[in-house]
Amino acid sequence: MSDWTKQFFRAAIFTPGSLEALAAAPGEASAAWKALNLKPGSRVLDLACGTGRHSILLARRGAIVLGLDKTPAYLKEARRRAGTLRNCRFVRGDMRRLPFENEFDAAMNLWTSFGYFAKESDDLKALRGVARALKPGGLFLIEMVDHAWVRARTSHRHWNRQSDGSYLLQDAGLVEGRDPRMINEWTILRRGCKPLRTRFTLRGYDKPRLYAALRRAGLRPLKSWTALVGSVRRKFNGRLVVLARKPIRQNWKVKVVPKA
Image (cartoon, rainbow, N blue to C red; front, side, top):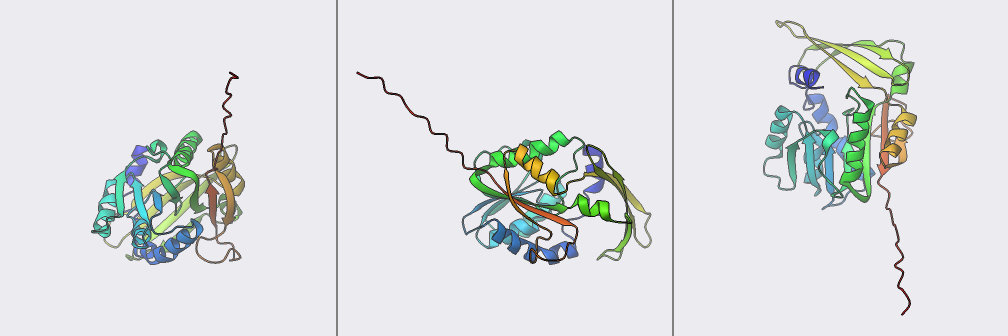
């Protein structure tokens, strides 16, 4: 995984702190606050936090937030944006090796930040780490592209103009079978610069597959939406949002006292 991430997670190719992302963040943070039933003092894990745009907004509402990401440049920007906020901190880490146990009231993974590992077993490691990190009864919110929507599209080649004036060509190929995936090739064109190209693979999760993975990890899916922001009845827009809970297990042990 390390080779492609070094090429992809850099400002010239991709930044979670783009103008579009920052503009959408307040609505997304409000939706996450409501879905996760957060209150001032709630402890929240923001998994793959990027430049911290959601973490910081939740912290400003009073939550105690830990943002985790693997890209040093993103974390540096997150710390700069957080400034003197004492209830928001950022650490570098691998989501497959979360070192937490029963620490958080809630966790979230937003903006299709899941499914990039070469092995499906690594995805499961990440979800099991979330389950360990949550307190019993804790909630987990995950949001990503819905592979059912991807399959239904007639074209997987699109041009988009970015906020910095560049153009992004996304060209995707689908691999079906037991482990469906989307192989993405990006080309970025900027005036006066050589084209930038990168390639990555995203594992295909539709609702049944994501629900199954969450259950295998020890989390219980509660409900799903087709958009993080807006009504549940909003027209399908290609997103998959799922809320899950870590069960409260009560293993009662009866102590047998021998008769005198």
